[in-house]
Image 1 (cartoon, rainbow, N blue to C red):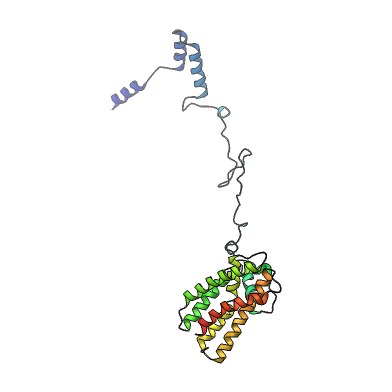
Image 2 (image 1 turned 180 degrees about the vertical axis):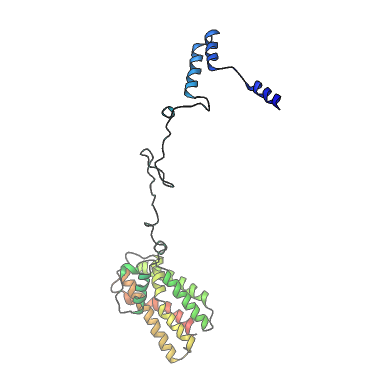
Length: 257
């Protein structure tokens, strides 16, 4: 083992030093610029393991930012449209256009035909309440043994198209399909009351017919009041109430018979 270690030491041992390199540059007439570049590289990059003073080492740039928050640089362009957090985000119901306060106000306006309607609220295209009332009407008819979901939605669509055409001819400002569907859908609430009564007792008689006529007048009066206030059609409430009564009369026929 000692002979192998002696051989390894002799094999890796070398007497070549930097001074020999300098003598070789001076003695063999090498290029001076090449020798000077080698000296500068040696001074800049010392051999690994050699001691270098701390003041000669290059100081790395310290990172002043925080974790997950990069440091601000004046040369970096600002990110437009960035919102820090979700505090300034609108609520989900507001993005979907669902306002429970407006729904409650419209429902109270329909339930009380003598109450004046707010035109700014009634002119909104809110279809949440109409969809709920259409489902409630179909569900109560189903409880009475009448599967009329297709008739309810079909008659509602045809009635909305007909009333939209009629109101655009009568009003100056015009009206949208969503506003017509919203008003007619909300005024369907008294018809849900009639269909709920049909579950308990039969409406095929004089009392049932009188009650059905009362509900038709209730629905048409509420719808005509809302249309006149939303579209500024004063003095034309009876003209609007007549086609509304025809439409709600079809729903009453589904309920009674």
